[in-house]
Image 1 (cartoon, rainbow, N blue to C red):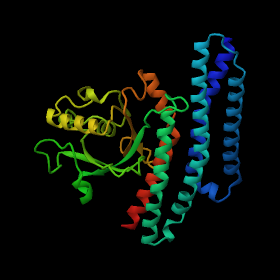
Image 2: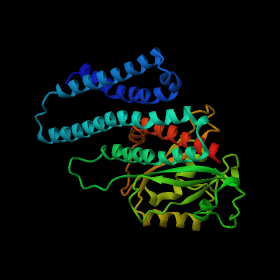
Image 3: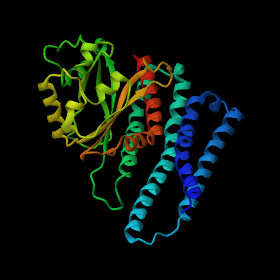
Image 4: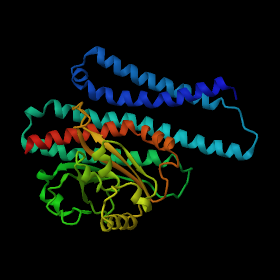
Length: 344
């Protein structure tokens, strides 16, 4: 296999991801222009979809033209890798079409929200739950195909969305499900936010119990030394977090976090068979100030260690491959919050 061939194939492989992300975000960013049938923006969007399809076709042809490997073990490995890539391409292509279907009605509702009654706004906000859950499930399937072959009995990944509340604006029902609060800090005044699990991918599981967890003030050095691992750390720092093994929480939390609190969280993960997890920060797409527009966290977890790879590069690659899902979740959650706030 020539270096030129390998280089061309690699370029095509990585080119697909940003193209799909741009094509997904484009109708969100230019919703008003598309809704008004501005030919420039409609044509631009159609062109993006066409380019995405063309790149996908070229990549398929490049994959199909690979020379047969004589070594049986290598050939088997290639077949497994080929399946994963095909599964990911199929999922991503389907997701792109489906994402557009999910986002388009929201654009219309938001464009006409000033004409809706409070009851209509609340109903519209609640209707977005199903769309968000569908995206959560697609996110899990996307990560699962990185590691599993056809017919694999491996347990699925699970995911959830946590929405952030400032401590002085926590709904009563959220306060009731608070966990992992520091000793003597029950009034929450020394915290800045609370993250609450509002939706999850396993929506048919009657045993799932949503929880809320506190987040330290990122501007408090003392507070950050007590930061909880996972989602609270990701939200406070504004950076995605991957925990490869939840048995090693000490390496992912504040140096001064009480051992009792860390033990309680470890027992929680064990009871739910969470051995590894990724926590991706969600931002409000309308606000460009990244230090101020955090609105929640997307959690994805597995029942096995290293569910997101054994190297930093593998983790980065998987997270980058979820960019279009993250963008869609941010848009839907932001739209939901707009409708809920105005209906209050």
